[in-house]
Length: 146
Ligand code: FES
Image (cartoon, rainbow, N blue to C red; front, side, top):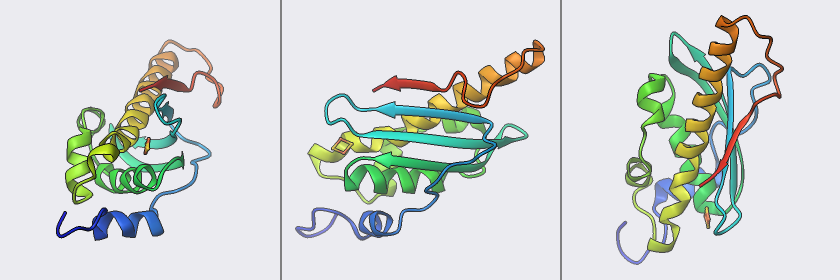
């Protein structure tokens, strides 16, 4: 970040116009994560094609930095192989956001955490499918606390 601006232009743009907000009705995986320190929360839906993230949507109840970094994150992981997407670090999100104030660094954890849980949920569904079990769309959503 340059000068004495608290947030970068990239971050402010994603806060004002967050990308990929919403839900995917027929998602292949759903995951959520909450930060117990501040109570902020992200839920994420993914579609997966040939083991790549073909679509991602999110909803966030959180601070401006959580909304903006999660929006940035959803753009970064579009089309990415799920193995790589599951390992995406919050430092990479922070870098793409043009930096974050020290007390806001934890906000960039929510996107990667929610996506990780959505991928776990996707893999669980796939294993159940191959084992012949029926999966209810709202059943077994993966949710943990950071
Ligand atoms: S203050 Fe906790 S996620 Fe932003």
